[in-house]
Length: 221
Image (tube, rainbow, N blue to C red; front, top):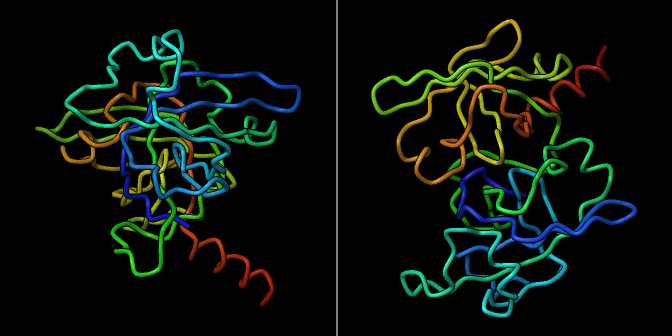
């Protein structure tokens, strides 16, 4: 379980293709010293299991070269790496299948009991892939319109919550094909949403309450 509050922007430094998916190696400044193997980390909103981890200093120069702006001693911040195995099903249902070395991704560690719930309850189970329809600068903010798959549209409500690439956002307006959000400077600075362009693909997760409410209504009917 997650909250949609991003703790770091990581970088994919290695992609290993496999018969039934791929393995990703990701660098992060998030302290992984207490993260156990088998723990969950949301990668652009997709819950992934940590299969390996260590200090970024252990990685080869050729691997680190995938991150052009990376230096292990940058600002004296210790960097870590972790690996995840991604199944074919996840590659098909999310944007992970198009990630290459150098891709920047939003990261969030799993929620612990007692943690502040600053966003909303997020499962890390991506419901579908949306697309950026338009981006408008309004002062220091970005107003972004996203399209959403038809089967998700009725789960998204004005002033409700939606997760976009792992980021908890408030829906400002519903459109015929999706929704509109307003991104403030803090969100733009601390997530990858500032890198979005027209036609960029994003992972979407609908609100957990909306999902179960719809299921209960089906049972009642």
